Length: 291
Image 1 (tube, helix red, strand yellow):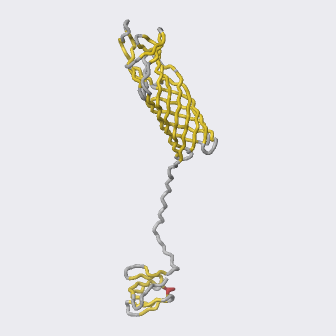
Image 2: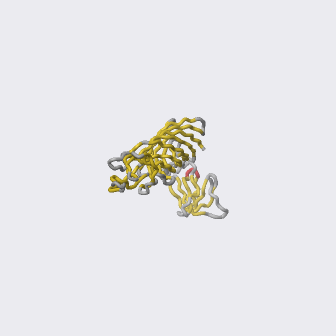
């Protein structure tokens, strides 16, 4: 690289040589030498092989010996860690199954003469999965469920007997799934909303009757669920699955005041709170389609 000089123009410069610096003006230059009018009054012809670097009067580098390797002591900046983008893979599932359901004997509120009873549960649902990686996913589901809740020793219409609420629900679920090569596990939350109010089936010594019990509310409830199962991959997009799932309610689906003692006319003399918190365990089958 040569210094570009216009004809008849000289440049103030500092020439750093192997023998020391030379301050002055560059008069001329070629590929072999640089002629400098030094501030001491002498004119020096310096070989390029002896020049390390030439600066102009503003301190900018005009020329640098190509054999000199710049020794930058600035530490190398470590490249930022690459961010792993979230996967944009999705799949859809259809599944259904049945099991047993009952008011939880641990979390429900019964008075002394009542207790839980077990009935069947039927569930059908659809779900969408957002796969973060091949081993985990966010699961969003919606479905329909038939659940019967029974409590024994309930006084209704002046008769003591077993009361059953045969309720239908819209289930919404959100969960997190861990997926292995064959098995999977899922933990999440359920929010179940009843489809209307049903009559209570009350079975007593006088027979079975459908009665209304406005003092006992039928309501939405939340639950925690845990599922574990096996998935069989048929193609790149289709897999079959079977799993067991347990729902444990954290709120009551049926709540109200019931008579603990009645007079001869059937009027309640004392009451207690009844709160039926659902519990269920079922076996399900389904199909997964990778979108």
